[in-house]
Length: 283
Image (cartoon, rainbow, N blue to C red):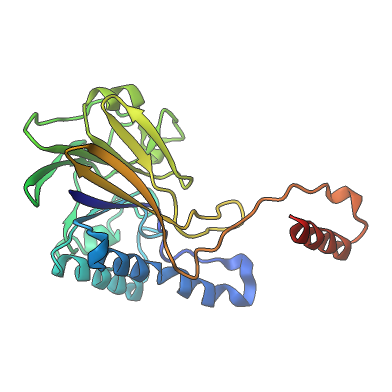
């Protein structure tokens, strides 16, 4: 059995300015989530063979040097231990710009860094006794064609598992940088697993013989983007492809609840807060 840890949308470096004086501490704690993920991957009992990062590991294309250095150090811990690492640029950490972290660090980036602007066979990885054929692209402004939505996907036809990784939007065109993708064309490509990124809510779709999965964002980026706190681990075996969700025991992954409240029934902010507390205690 081969096991892949599928990550996307960590958005390291995101600044929670709305938290005021608590913003710096929260950002530092949030940025350390990658170290917690690496510890999970390195734990022998979890059996991770490949870590696949499908876009937006950073919240911008040119993060601070200290964050870049620490991120590369963590990823190098994986590659030095024998775990394969593949990184796909996203739309927040876009490769397009001359000062993109991926252009500046391309020669030193741990593992495989996807840089091609068109869908292509990126690599064939030997994992155990199996071959994994990887297909991907790095959206590059002015080169990657997104109109009509991406609909030409390669498949080399060789024996082994065929895995695609795209940071984009299935059947949803929100502009070039959202990388719109034709779901029907992706299904016809015949991949065993399609690792997606871009949408922060976890979801999965049956695509032909395979499955496409958005793992979701691990940690919150505000009240309307609470994070899922779950890791997506994909197993490949003679029984086929199985997708598992595992909780990440890290302090920044806090459960969120949605309460719908008619604020008009309260006269003051203090009454509203008291009403919310009463609802929480009751539920």
